[in-house]
Image (cartoon, rainbow, N blue to C red):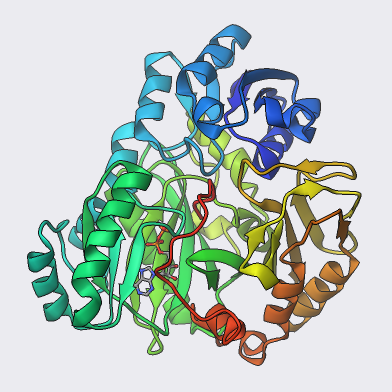
Length: 466
Ligand code: ADP
């Protein structure tokens, strides 16, 4: 195991990693921008190094400054968290060149699987079912339109380098295709420096179900059950749960086994997530792989008892996987609600400000991962995620009422500050959600007609990619 690692991230996930390290006796180096000088992670890490001004580009995305901080402090490895540099194969390579272990898959695996179009080709070849679509990225709009025609509308145009729900457009009819295609390419180029796009059939009533896997560098791997993340606004998750509800045991097993097969075929190592869309007939289709720890990982931790960050660190340290598939038991139900500093009444506009009151819930089977504290200044620079409220119960009904109780307890306020708590409470109240029979269309339905659905509209940049 490492003696010291550097955490190349901020907010709740940086704290999450600090906690795992302390439990394992690993010393930690936090890096921070000047905007995060007073953050909890700076206080709790063993050492902290300022890497630049607030702009992400100059701090949390500043690879040379991060590597230099690792060199100066003698860190042996870098945990990238999620977002920022976590899926940047070049950064993983730079770490390796500087003698640092990157906590994640090898750069070549990451660059193959992190490219959504290449991942689609690789996983298709490994036998994973794909939504009907193009196997290659497409060039001219003309050619793409012919592909869309073949697939049948509606279709979704996706940037190969996209992530975080960005760089995608849904097209309902041929009439709108060419304009949407050009717009998506321009947006993808601007956001990711890469204008390659591909086209897939849009599965309008599908559920987003993902599988957590862990693989070591010796060909061993396990799956750790499913999470349903269908509660999304503009492809950004708001509420997650595990295991995915209202699906047959055989579908859940098939999903998990399929994901693991995909991971092992690609030489994946570390913690990873295989995302699928599941249609009404419980047919599932692979959409992408997230090569990192995800925001919603606590859901899996609660239903399996496995600390995923501990496992990431062991795997990165070269320890053979400590779990066999027979050790993994899915127990009970966990729910997670994201508390973002946004105003649901104003199109989820971020509302930064100082938290004059901040008392997160606690109580039985309730976990809150947050970097907030009373007096904390929520800045305008980064992702608006402030807290994740996670509950566990032996059954789903009790998990729902436990979550309601927890959100009821959450006391957070400040001048001009709004949160997504009222909105996620509406989700929990929804009849379809309560039955566990909901799809990615749920949030749009709840927001209509005050906020008409516009799944293709651009939105504020985010470091969140899960
Ligand atoms: P990102 O990499 O930006 O997270 P994904 O490919 O994972 O993008 O898709 C994010 C979300 O977009 C999915 O969870 C789903 O709600 C929606 N989506 C993506 N592909 C499709 C599709 N083929 N049909 C319907 N919805 C889709």
